[in-house]
Image (cartoon, rainbow, N blue to C red):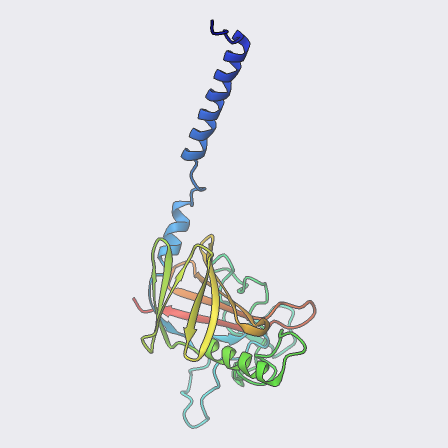
Length: 265
């Protein structure tokens, strides 16, 4: 004759089965946190054709134009960037027009790291090349051989090459960039590390969205690190690209550039 199980055991088993089914249902129905519609719209608005603004793109350490200025014989009269007086700065100290806040709301202040544009020369010119000695080597680990330093310098030069125009397409899972030389690179925005090549430069990149900002973290061999942050002005007519090289060091100037692009379409 088969023995009957105690009623308490049967009830307990039924409760456990019910709880397990409930937990399974919660797990399968869980969805990622929703992103606000406004943020999604701001991300999508980065899609477009963008033209490099040489007058307002500056070396973040000193506020001078990123690209070398034209010679005195070719400089166009009246082409100087507008000069903005900096509150509390010494007489004659000016900076380029504000690049907008890190949130892209168009307010004064600019880079996500709070560095702003820095001070340029009084007339807004006198820029230095981003590839000059002491610029691209900052933040690199001590103990690198000459060949390692040379490779990092070459990587910096290739990655810091200025695209005179950018065509950007934002999709659900990736962002695609096409530069003025018709080179195309697609970055998945799930944060996974992906490998890329630009000219002779090989690097890894992890790309994610931080609200409406696109953040790209680049790594090369021998400790090379670079970040790129993309965000729009309040009216979505300008694209700001904040580039930083190496790890920020307290008490030392930032190493990088603050670029401005104007929307073409």
